[in-house]
Length: 100
Image (cartoon, rainbow, N blue to C red; front, side):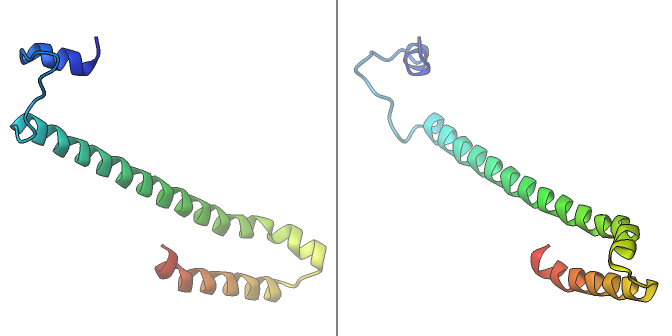
């Protein structure tokens, strides 16, 4: 027995008879459905923003871990690595308000 049949049976309607559209039960169900959909949408957006923030933080912590390899592979001085860090951090801080 599906939900519709169980609902008809619980309110004692015959199978051909429909419930009025303006009953409080239908209004409450429609309101709950909209609230549930909005909640799912908000959670999806929040999860996507959180994932992007995680990727941003991981990228910011990855560059300092690569400094020893960059220094030996490209024969960089500590000053050049400092300029690389400065450029990366300034770019990140300028884009942070725009991207989040």
